[in-house]
Length: 227
Image 1: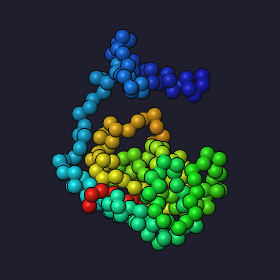
Image 2: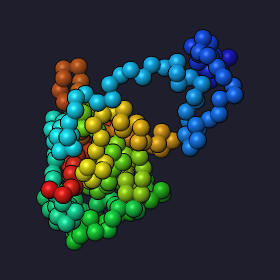
Image 3: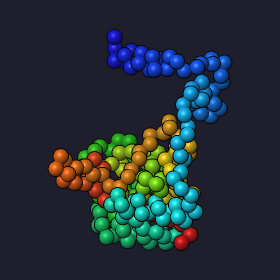
Image 4: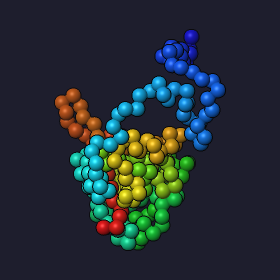
């Protein structure tokens, strides 16, 4: 028996007592959902902890991002190019990686040589890139989490894992949700989702924290809104 057969056998046994209705049609536009099992799974968990205004939700996001040691900035659409230019100048990278769909006006007059997100780029080539600038799919306020889904303004997953410095732009309030359940309702599970809570970090058995092990050592999140 193969490993695949073993796993599928366990799944079948776990679902043996779940009511089935083979005539139930699939959910339009959501082929990953199986409506035959939806009523058998409890959905009584809270979708949001407490009631907050939009401004309070954004403030909670900023607070939790900072708690995870991300550096949080706030600006407007007009001020975004100058802010990104300043953040790159302070960091001083020789190369900055730019996804293909990143709005060109975001980069303004930033000085570093811009490197395109290419499928043929090797890990060694990406390791020479000091910074990467991306957008995001969503940001979750209650957990201080940024979600990337490989969209045009985010690029391939690896371009945000290898460079040491990541600048991530979040549009406020459109891309901010309060909780993980709300985020899951808006995300496409067929996309390559990357959930980021602060800069990459790990600790050994003595709780010595090391940053930058499997992702950027520095994460800067820019909240772009009206204020």
